[in-house]
Length: 101
Image (cartoon, rainbow, N blue to C red):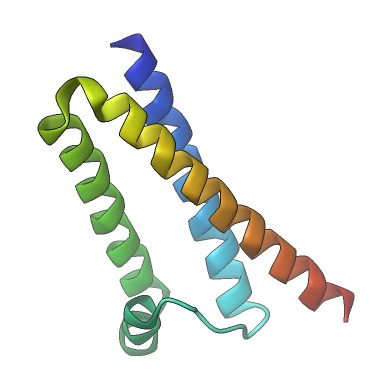
């Protein structure tokens, strides 16, 4: 159980970093959200809507992984962690390139 707790902690931190970098890019740099669903939500509801959308998605991923996959939930969370690590890296790179201009 401790291992899944660590995986979920990393998952939460990566998602927080995703939110921070996305929020910064959208609100301070005027960049565009690439996800078409998230983009529509951001256009209609602003950052509060985007944050809510993100938390619902994160919650569903964590809940589904833990309840449906059982013993393999930890593996699933680490797969998501790798995906979100690349998302955060991508966001950070795009911000750095934008700030460099």
